[in-house]
Image (cartoon, rainbow, N blue to C red; front, side):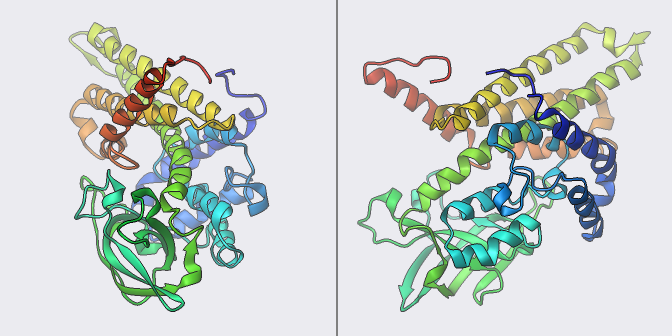
Length: 394
């Protein structure tokens, strides 16, 4: 394994980097106020330049980049919160999930429009009344009534539900005596179905991001809307979340790189007490700590991506980078804000939004504590079985 960007990936990575820095990042203030027209314009430009849906399989109309190659591209795409939307990769987790598990009718209705960016997906798992870090407690349930599923429950943080064509709902479909991890299924629910009610869009640390609270009151959908086998919801979710967490971590590296660039530029541009900030030892400590954390997280992330690319389970590797990556991003942005001083707390730089998004990263797709416990348990389990844990690709 090499940690350098492969020669075969470098041209497309450079093209994405240029697109992000020259067109997306300067447009961020306008995109925050956009009615959708500017986003569509940038999406069309990305399609014309062959930068659309690069991580989607080619047979679905995507760029067909292999998983590890796409990780390198995702790193620069992540420089902006709008990167996924502009380059058509915001549907990747849902598209891969449907590609593997959807019926022919489901593929026809949802998969092609997803890859084309013509419709938006949403995914409903978290619930407000239970600790969703233990998903076996989820209360939303579906029962068969003839050839229809009838769904009742209460979800929140269903990202994108307010503009999505459908929601993939994780719900209990099996009796209480069923094994907990075989008691839940995924069902595709069009968002215009009667009984599907968006209660509110919940801001996250003051940022609106279409994170919706949704109630399901006798929502009826055809039994054919079951995604994959009955009772296999957690199995499908795990296959969805593993790659998704690596995608998060690679995008976080792009955000960290941007914050690092801003910090170092500021250290040279500002002076205090008779000399540039770059000559202050404490400021150089910020640079050192940020470099070490970014590089450590990057190597851990690439190692996890390589393990997945090799067909390994990689549960330990992915759990570790989800924690390390989120902490790294928060720390690097925090130091950049400190270097900027009061200006870093304002919308005059992208750091204030980046900081709030970074804090959320320690919670979504599993809180840090769950991943820490899982990684520790798996490693100790290897020793309990009479083995050990080798630091290297297994």
